[in-house]
Length: 261
Image 1 (cartoon, rainbow, N blue to C red):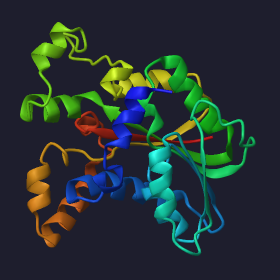
Image 2: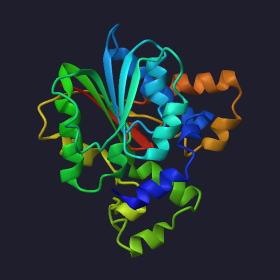
Image 3: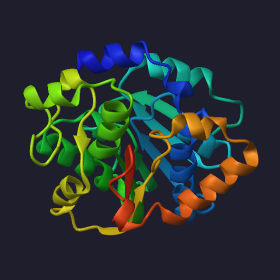
Image 4: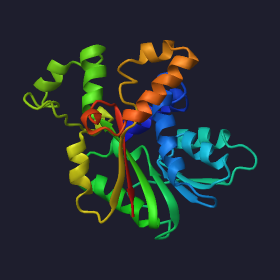
């Protein structure tokens, strides 16, 4: 268990991250795509459910949801957020080992956090392999990633929260391609679409969508948060129209790969 990860989520308000206007773009975009594939009676598994923003939203729409989460602190908040009438369960578990769950069990499987914190190709493929295993044939898997270029532009060049030159000096950013490398102490694994394509190359699945989940929303968060409701809805309409454009795919902080088993 990654102690850096546990420490981070014990002291981080994950429950509020998706609530601000700029943070809600990722949530609203991902939910929009989930709803495309939900049917009455769909069974949903969320792996790495965090505090349950997606799980509870789906359970409140009448879907049967099972959730797995690694961090006990997040599980406590998840349970506090559960409302009467939700058909929902949560267990503590690891995305790399879903042996408590049967093969071919779920219509929709959400892997919206674990791949942020897995640092080897072997571990990432194992998490994907497990998510695919528990999904029914014809079911749909949603796998989310943190994308390096959006983070580099936002946290590096714009905000200065990270030193791009310092990261290059430490070997965490390639001086020629600006591709990122990460270690557990860095908390987040930063990837590009070509890395995701390579990861997925061994799986016999069909990609349905590759989505820039928040686009420029984090980069321009102050402007997004200052929008009145009409302008924000227009911004969302624009974002939904362009979030699958290949020429914009890399300029995002988060991406969701959506594929059918």
